[in-house]
Length: 240
Image (cartoon, rainbow, N blue to C red; front, side, top):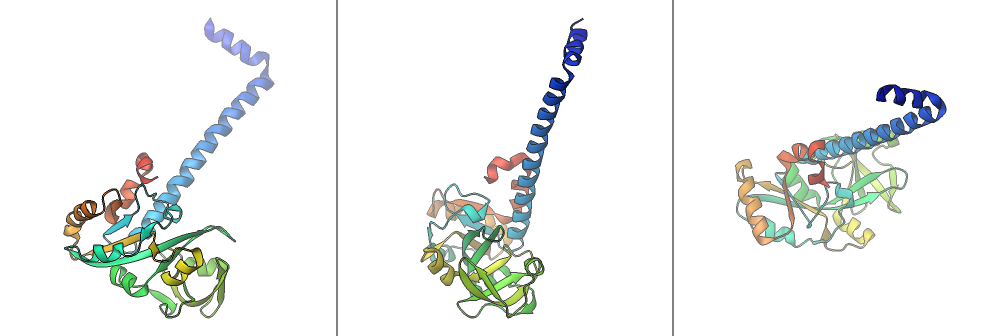
């Protein structure tokens, strides 16, 4: 009896019923879309960070997996303390800057030598590593999308950069510049957003992380090998 009344009520005003159904459907579709985009962004970010080849990354307290929004509140001298720790082979600071002009992208400011020591270096398809203060490295996907070639001028962050190398994608970011130049451009002198650490052996990762937590209490310390699992949609709150 109750079901029959519900059906009659729905059929009594079919237009209102149709509008209600469409409204619910749109809301559900938007939720699914947002969750899907967020999950995809996290997974893609995690894969590229893992591709750097480091064992550990150190970020400021309560840092987000969306690295481009993490700012740069850490003194770069922290890197010296990290490099002195037992089982630490190399430390690479990076300054990350979010840019939304002409598209959404995150620029990594790095020291080429320390980044090479941690990551093993870039796989260059054209050109070479950074040598000058205005040099820029672009990954192959970004180069195709922007039709960029070695020798071109690439304008970003209101600065003209000289493209000196195009590398195989999957090394953290699509754009790399010298960290000192980026620090000056964004007003973050002697600051870093993140530190990448390479351990002498992968099995020493947990020991190094424990020591970092003791020396830098409150800082966010994450193992890169577990990054994809941590950013699974079921554990999304951990990553935000």
